Length: 141
Image (tube, rainbow, N blue to C red; front, top):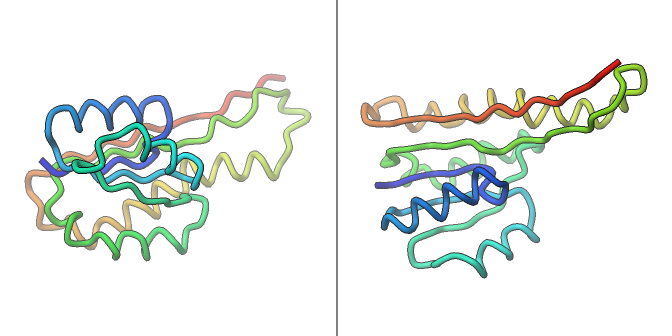
């Protein structure tokens, strides 16, 4: 099977990446930054996996990156988005709006942009499973 995992360096993403690779699948994984990419490259069997960087906060880069892998995307069986930003647990009275906006962008807006970008390539794929894990931030009074 062909599998794509966004957020591959996090807890869920790294577990799923290792699981799918161990089952001899072709896996395309995306991670947010160079440090995470390097760490994954060292820990995985690179014959079965392609690793690339994609920061979902940068909406304009999402479509460029998807276009780069459009032929793999068209033949994909499973797409998983395990990316997310947990934000900070703080009082709602003292929320840092810049950090809160980042959390909203990564957890919600980027999912919409990602699905819109993927839709160009997956419309005809009748055997596709898409799984998105939504992370939420927690705030208290």
